[in-house]
Length: 514
Image (cartoon, rainbow, N blue to C red; front, side):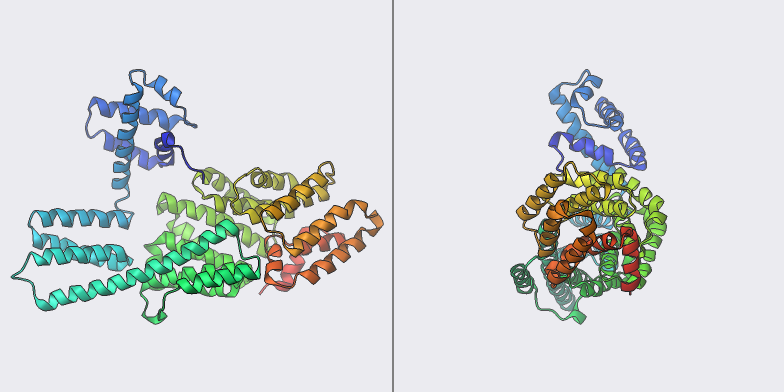
């Protein structure tokens, strides 16, 4: 997701609003009918109708507004929209509700209404317990100390001691959460920037990072948030090191603690992320039974919760449903049968793409290109590949390297020979530059470089030799990585046996599926 220029922040905010939020804002804005309000509502209406930000056009629509006034008007409108959105989300966002409760507790405390303040505080503490909101719980304990210290004649020693014990326990849990969270975030950032480990040296560096930053713990003594972030950290460590069975193990623990506590209905975004990770892991180990179980859980979640999700969680659902729809198709190998479903999810992706993070957008476009390649819809495959090939961002350079290889395979399959050698050299240079060249890729690209000199009657023999050589070098996790992103061996087998790529993938899936 690209950074928005400062002058377009208001426009981006307005464009992100739902119809319901826009209606609520209009009502919110009309509560006072001054001239300033009329002006900023007019500015809102102008920006709402625009598809692209055009400041010159906006100023023409507001002829009595100078540039200085315009800047102030934008700032005022921005704060008014945020105020309206805060009220709109009060019932649906527990963090906003708790912050409001903290404000009310503080106001009552400053008025000297200590009993009323404590009454609200105890109600808020129950909410933080239900939602496992540790940071808010700490803030409430701090307020409780302040309030009770004003009630000297009512304060009991045991009560003061109990608050102190609760605070120490909450602080310890919070510190653990921060350590687990930071570790999980560092591992995820490493993956987004560089992909999975590609050498023994990278593996050793990753292990050093993980184990030196992992605090001592006893899992059975951990509270919900500690477990949540611990499982996330272990998931990412397992994923980066190709231990996909452990990925399934920790992602399932992640999902289960939400089911066990009922928080799958309360902290829906975090639950949804765990569900996506579990599906991704089941896909990696070809466990169709487990995949089907949790893909159904994702579909049920979409059906029951989808309409009531906050905007950012709806975007999560769109991107995860897209990724897992592709994975489900790849596991069942029913390509043409799922064409309409894929087209439907891609429409939703395109409608929400400005809110989808760049990393997941790259993944979705790559999976779409593989799907259309397998379906022999080469123009559609090229359409999504070009989105990756024309992107200068270095994010997920590993996938972009495979996208270049896939583009070359399409040219070969369709007989497009005009730029074949140029594309081959460009792909080789890109993969080497990004330090993603593995032995499998090197052997395969070297073969493609020589393919033009092989006589047609010798092509089958050439592909058989290529297969044998790849099997010889494909002897470790770092080499096997190439085959995680595209089933190169099935493509080679299709050339040897004179059958379609989809047929070979389907045949292999029947043998490998758990």
